[in-house]
Length: 206
Image (cartoon, rainbow, N blue to C red; front, side):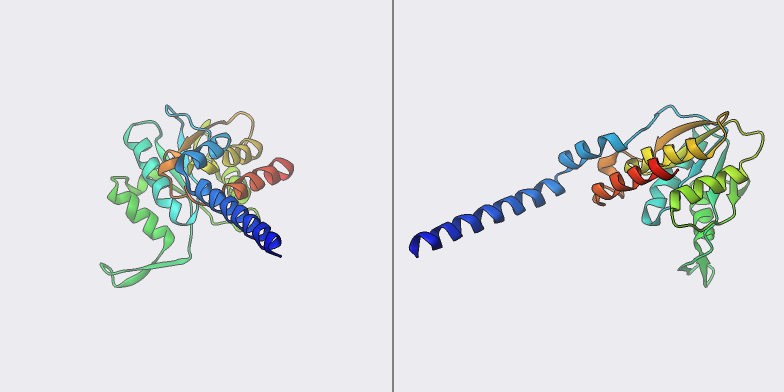
C-alpha cells in the first residue's frame, strides 16, 4: 500500500509539473511569438491608394493608429472603415452616447485625420466576420483604386490577406500591414490555436 501511495504521489507530481510547464510556456512572450510567426505577414514599406482597417473589438484602436500613421507618412491617401452603428460609450463632451462609428471618427480626428480622408462602407453582417468584411469591401471599392493596404493585428494578418486576395479582383494589389509587432499587440494573449483553426477554415471556404 505504501508503494501504491508513493506511485500516486509521483504520478500527481508529474501531472502538476506538466500542467505548470504548459501554463508557463503559454504565457511566455518568446514562445507565443515563435508560435505565431507563421500567422504574421507584414510589409513595413506598404503603400496603396487606400488602407482598409479591419474591425475588431479592443484591437481596433491599435489598427486606427497604424492607419493614421500611413496617412501621415503619405503611404496612402484614404482610410476605409466599415460603419459600426452599435451604441458605444457615453461622450461627456456632448452629453450623449456615441456609436462606435462616431468614436472611430473622433479618434482619427484626434490623430489629425480629417473626415474627408475616411471612406465609410456600409455595415455588413455574416457568420464569418473577416470574410464578410472583405466581400463588403470588394462591393464598395472605388473603381479607380488599384491597390489596397490591409491593416489588422499581427496574428490576424495571414487570414485577412487570404480573405482579401480571394475576394478582390485579381488586378487589385493587396499589401499586408500589421498594426504592431506581435509582442506589443492587443491580441498578444488571445488563443493562438483558435487563429490557426480559423485560418484552416478560411482556406477551405474563402
